[in-house]
Image (cartoon, rainbow, N blue to C red; front, side, top):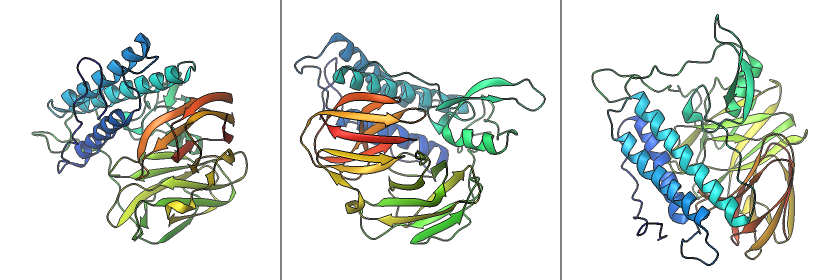
Length: 361
């Protein structure tokens, strides 16, 4: 158990999921962040720890406590937004802590997605105008950027401030729901997609598992898991450097099937998603190259590493635990070269929209 500032970090017990899909989803986000805090390698008493590192850890711990307090309110949409903002603050604090530990510049910070804070951190600025309104620059997540590129019309608005979350009385304002339109299959295929259909990939008998997603043509693709449980991320950018997509993604925890949507900018690309065991992740000791998002298996020792990247937006390298769940971000930056510290052998998630290489320094 990792100790924090001010007398130590309490054990982060997961909250019990309620029978309310919106609240259960936010509960899972709080639990995931709490577990990331517990798993972080930094200790305030370690050699070389600075006041700035202590400050970022304290900010992350405060954000976690604030998120739990905010969800204990009247269960309004405003309460939910407060939780998501607190979690975003905490994740940024951990990213800053990682940068300080690696001796790298502090990461830039984009706001949460304009259309829905539950989409996570925005990845780009786009020009958008509400119906009858003036155009303006807004920050949006990758999936909404794809949707706006395909159809510049209005996106489903966010619930009005003050509306209540599911299960609260007397009013309800349900989170957007998805009607599952495909039966669970061991392999799922499609042609293009605007995210209007939900697909179900049957979970294999072995756990944990990967999804292998591929296209027959080059195409910017975003994949979004629906109604996920556990700690895997929801949104993945799978586009590479102008080549067809071949990506491995950690499958969220699920009993029978995992639901997902596909957002592709073209419309004619044939894609396939199938489950695969962990051994499908490519192994390496010294160096590996790739494009787009992928899962890799580092077999080297702890120590300095080098990340080289050519692509839009930012690239992130995340350490995963033995269940392929997010543990900590070890590297994050834009196009160019940066150094970081390999925590050691294990599985790592690369989040990228371009070509990259990872190596031991």
